[in-house]
Each structure stands twice: as C-alpha cells, then as structure tokens.
Image (cartoon, rainbow, N blue to C red; front, side, top):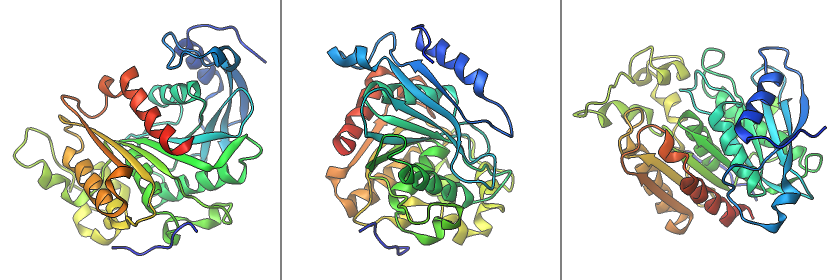
Length: 333
C-alpha cells in the first residue's frame, strides 16, 4: 500500500441544449482562450425537480475558460454557478477520451452540468493536459490543482469549500477515483502549480467506468470478443505513461487508485456497463471491493448496468442521473 497523510446579460428561455450549444460555440476556441461570463437558462424539457422555487433558479452563470494554472493552455475550467444565494456545493466534472482527447465543453459534460445545476449544485468542468502534451502524473497534478484553485476562490464564486465532489467518465473516472483516494499524497500534488496552501481533497466521487489497473486489462479481456492491445506501445494507456505498460510497472502503479486507499477516503458511487469492451467491468468491481474493505460498505455503491457498453444512453437517462444526484445529496448537502 502506498502511504500518504490524511486531510486533518440574460437570454430568452429556449430549449436548453440548443441554447447551451450556441453559447459554448460562440465562446470556445483553441489557444489564447479568453475568460467570458454569460447567463443561460437551466430549465430542461423534463426538469429533475418539481419545486415552487424552480422559477427563481431559471438562470445560472457560466464563467468559461477560467485558468487554474498557467503552464499550459489546457489548464482551464468552465464554472457553472446556480442563481440565488450560496455557498453552493461543487462537483468537479472530468471528461474522458483515453487521456488523449476530450474537452470540458463536450455535450456529455454540459449535460452533467445541467443536471447538477437543476439540483442546486455548482459544477466545474475541467480540462487537463493530454498525453500528447505531458505524460502521467501531469493529469492528476492538473485535477488536484483545479480543486485547490476552486477552494482558494470559493468565496469569490459562492462555493462551499467543504462540500466538493468529483464526477468522471472513462479516463475522467480514473482521475476522479484518484482524487478520491490520494488526498494528501505529495508526489501527486505538484503544489508549485498554485494554491499550495489549499487542500485538493474531495469527499464524494462518481466514477463512471474508469480504468483502474492498467497492467491487468489485457488478461481480463482474454477469452472474450473484446479487442485488447493495452500493452502495445501505441495504446492510449502506454502513451499516458510514455512507454509500453509492462516496461514501467512502478509508474503504472501510480495510476491505480486501489494503491492509495485508506480509511479517510471519499465516498464512492461506481457504475460500469456489463458489456463494456473498452474497460473490463471487473476493474470497477475490484475497486469497489477494495474500497469496501477499507472504508466500509456504507460509503461504497457499485452498480453494474446490465447490457450497457462503455458509456452511452443507459448512463444518461433521467433515472440514472437521479441516482447520481441522490448519491451526491447524501454527502454534499
């Protein structure tokens, strides 16, 4: 077990997805990103809530391309804050893409932010350095730096600095799981990136089909129709660590959240599709078992979605978003 220390301008109401897409298109770009702030409606065709207060929360603010560090253009986030008085609990959204693609303003990330806003949460969707720019641990360094930045600026943005959670999918699920298990691990902080006095801890994690043990993925797909190739030099996992996986096992071990589990870790809600051919479902199952052994079953939910693959519509139903919100409500409100 790896040792660590513990943490002692309004626009008219229109259908939301068209509105958000237009806004994010207008304010997005590559390189030399400008910070922008706009208002947008947060009601959906089928809102999650049926509340008399819904009218008062019809607008939220998004601050786009907010830099949380300065050594890379990738170190930016989009911050969504509900209308009304805070401070608001915050969920950090982490995109997937095999550590080599993806974006904080992707449609899946916007949808997650939408549902969080509807339930009174602030959301911060982060970008991080991809593997073609920097190898691991740059990705977890960036995620932790983003958390420290948000905590340092909690009062400015009406955030509740105590109630921070994380929600990642695929590669983002790996990073979210690492945030939940590596509180206080100095080598994964890179405090020089900023706000070293702040904690990078989160207290609740939603991990959607994240990679856990890179070194075991090939063998876990043996005997199935799923494609392997994880140990190849050009696999997404090998590119993340800068070498074929099996040649750098010590570095690969630092990508595995199981290696950092301790009794004060975040609560976890882990979901995985039973027909996932990108990440073996047993990866999430073993993470859930390892967490349960140490932090207790009351803080760990493992939910296998029968028939689902690597993401897709089964994860994005209203019913499933309700499950996620219910989990976050248990720890962040």
